[in-house]
Length: 381
Image (cartoon, rainbow, N blue to C red):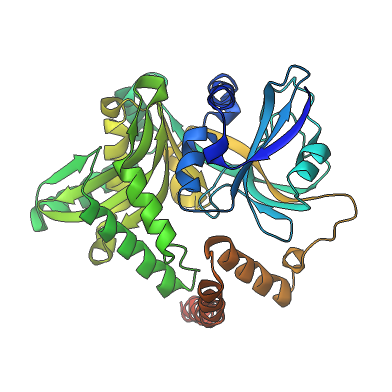
């Protein structure tokens, strides 16, 4: 029987989950852990709005999967937003997917995306611009990769060694843990990151209880081995007994996608982020990683360490007759609407959304003052 079906993850059948996982393994663009059924199941434990829409062929077999979070007004967001950094309809590129039919069957009128992986160009007709995602992909081992980085920019490498030596003299010997499982350290990293968001006027997406619960659940998750290994992964950098920096995220097989990069605020001058990345690359093979996916944005520090750039889409898909939301506007009201929409994507109840909206107004002032100070400093310089 052909057609469409939308289900919650706890009702997804074993055969459908296996077909979904097989597509993620065989279609390179969908090899990220963020599009896997394992990740969707983890998210669904903490977000009741998690769904997966399926298209079935004439034999009743699922041939396309679209995991998402859905609001009552028909607005779909990436699975686990704002932590679903990649999105897409998971299907073989040659599969004829009825995108309007799939969306309509799930009750989706609008789909706002910000890291679309679309090898078959199924969203080509939507309102889209493009962005770049950055990845470290080991092809000939970590040592060869690091040698190439040093040869490409000897000055940067020398500066990194100088800062590392200074840190070791003043604080303690540098050490790196590529599989840190201490939940107290995760809380420390989350605290640093939350403080940074508040200080810079960014929406604190780590504030909702479900976010921290999901991350702690992921840290404790260890499923499968080899190409099927799935779970949370935290890597940390220490100087002596002092935590300097860490990344936390999710892995599937040889691919690691960290969401959160946090640095000890007392050691910004030592640039521990650079030392962290050099050490992380060195440790990838030890924990079975071939791809370290740094994701979108902050190209100034990601690009110099990465050897693969992936083109992704950002935009809005609209059903026929649906109207674009205010957040698509480029004026002040549009920016405010985007901030409120960002709050709504992570806060699951009305009380949390009201707190988030109030904080958005405060944060807007913080960001404006920060930009004004930056401009004043530039003029003074």
